[in-house]
Image 1 (tube, rainbow, N blue to C red):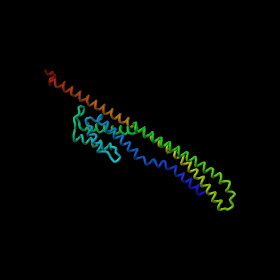
Image 2: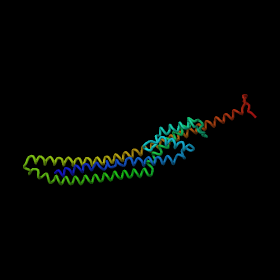
Image 3: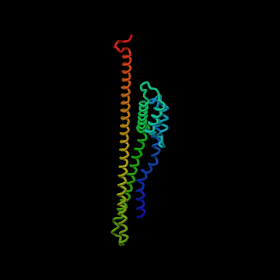
Image 4: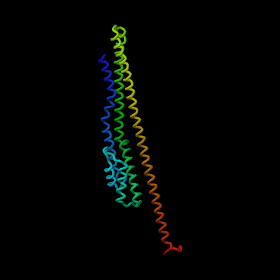
Length: 261
C-alpha cells in the first residue's frame, strides 16, 4: 500500500513539472523578442528619421536597458534635448521645438512598430506557434499520464475493496479503509490537475490573442498619430505659403493702393 501511495504522489508531482520546466525558456524567448525589435529599429531608422538617423540611433542606444529594449520616454526626451541644443534646418519646419517634438513622436512610433514586428513578424509568429505546440503536447501528455494513473489506481481499488470486510483485525481494517480513501482523494486530485492544465493552456492561448489585439491597436494608434502630424504639417506649410504670397502681393502695392512698377 505504501508503494501505491508513493506512486500516486509522484505522478501527482509530474503533472506540475512540465509547466515549471517551461520557465527556463522565458528569458530566452524574451531575448529573441528584443533582438528582433533592435533589428527592426536599426533597419528602419534611415527610412523614418533621415537625415537624423545617427542621432536617433544614439538616442535609442542611450535609452536601452538591461532587457535590451529602449525606453521610449527616455529615448524621446534624449532626442528632443539633442535637437533643441543642436537644431537642424528643415524645409518644412524651422521651429526647433516643433521639430524636436515631431521627431520624438516619430521615434515612439518606430518603437511601437518594432514591438509589433517582433511579436507578429515571421520569426515572432514562429515562436508563438512553437510555444502553442509545446503547450498542446504537454497537455496531451498530462491527460495520458492521468488516464493511466486512474486505470492503475482503479484496478487497485477493485482488488482492495472486496478484501476489507474480510479483515478481522479492527486496526488493520481501519488502516485499509484509510488507504482506500487516500487513493480516491489522489484520483480526484489527478483529475483536478489535469483539468487545470487544460485551463492554463487555454489561458495562455487567450493571452496571446489578447496581446495580438493590443499590438494591432497600438499599430493603429501609431498610424493615426502619424496622419495627424502630416495633416498639421500640411496646414503649416499651406499657411506659410499663403503668408508668403500675401507678403509678395502687398510689397508690390504702395500706401495709396497703387502697384509698384
